[in-house]
Image 1 (tube, rainbow, N blue to C red):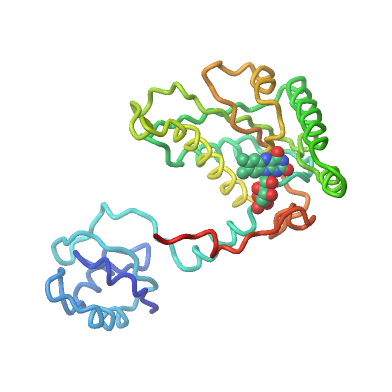
Image 2: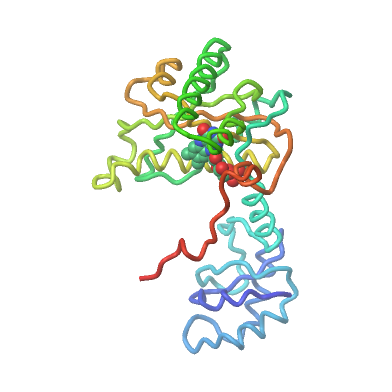
Length: 286
Ligand SMILES: Cc1cc2nc3c(=O)[nH]c(=O)nc-3n(C[C@H](O)[C@H](O)[C@H](O)COP(=O)(O)O)c2cc1C
């Protein structure tokens, strides 16, 4: 069994090893083999050696000390395996901003489920300020597409020469093809959370809603569904088109659908517009 070394830093109670689904019985097994209990006189190497003898698939969790061999029914948090972590990194690598969609439909139940997952995102003071508008009305969709085309033409006019040519070649929204359109707002007047955490940094409310967008992005990618974020819009006009409450701030217009072609690299990288930065210079130490 591979025992992650980092478990040693967590020792303070009972170390539980488990091979689901019968975690309780395995925790007894581990406990009986541990050379030491609790933190006093704790020797990481002897614990490590003991754990090497435990015939379980993973060492997973530290729990508070409890009477020996008593099943702990409250331990229900999930187990994230190395395989899951590898999959998760793949999800991060393969999540793309998608502008090329197949036009096939997406089950509304899937979208509902993705939104439910997105709303598990963290939010300042647990304010949950995200508001989602599913845009089905073809007239409003048409207005949003026209908004994009106008705004994009204005953006293009700010570039010159070769960069203008490169910009003009980019496809920067899949509004006409994507079957699902979702506008995302933050309710900046939300009383949820009673202002906790945002008194000196009110922007945290909007950032919280953005966290939910990213969560939605990942959840969609995990289903093989593409999401494209369209920000090349006149926000006031989009707000009016969608007749959203005045106290909401327009954050994003999202296109969702089945991607025409998955890729591990951003489109802007593939087209030579921008490159991924090396990470080292972006991390400072003080
Ligand atoms: C806040 C935000 C706004 C964005 N707006 C647009 C947009 O209007 N049009 C577009 O094509 N991509 C847009 N993108 C997608 C980025 O271009 C994309 O994330 C970036 O090129 C990296 O590619 P990747 O998401 O596939 O890794 C936006 C992304 C973010 C986070």
